[in-house]
Image (cartoon, rainbow, N blue to C red):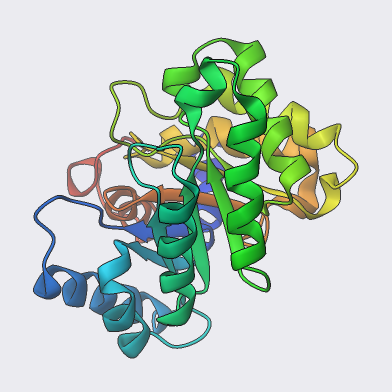
Length: 261
């Protein structure tokens, strides 16, 4: 397959699996309305919709009002610090669900994992899992802070054993976000887990071009299988990535997007 055709195929997959995201400190209602309007416009486009819109918890009601199926509403909890505060995490996740959110992106207490406090970290994830039954729960490992592959594997195992639906790389708020080596560790743990066939993977942070998404697509295909290449089990958390996806799919010159194809 030619590079151009491979890029188009990757762009189509990335679009279908995209969590269009805005988690800026200065986000306001107007910014979220614009984000949702862009997502709604994509849902009416012949190339198809994004998977979800991901926002701060305080904007879930706005997003829910503006978005309809198949667009899903996601919001973050215990974000971005990943505190070891069970009550806070449960309250935030419960509020997301109560306000109409479909998905919760929860930050793992990764500092507790680094300190060897695995049981306490697991107890927080399990409590949020109970509070969000019937809704998609994505666990953000913050792999750029865990760093060591063994730590990433431990955190991945912890999340899967606690019943999360997705493992997610990063908050996008630390110096190192998604990396291919960290993703490979996460995917290997998923592939070896008894729940492998029902768990998904999300790459988030620093993804701006279709070319950035392609290594993750290849590894998901290789380690989880072709059936995992869809929004039920694969997500990309980004906003800038959509510009390059549209440039690739619309056959625009490189200057119209951020990549060269």
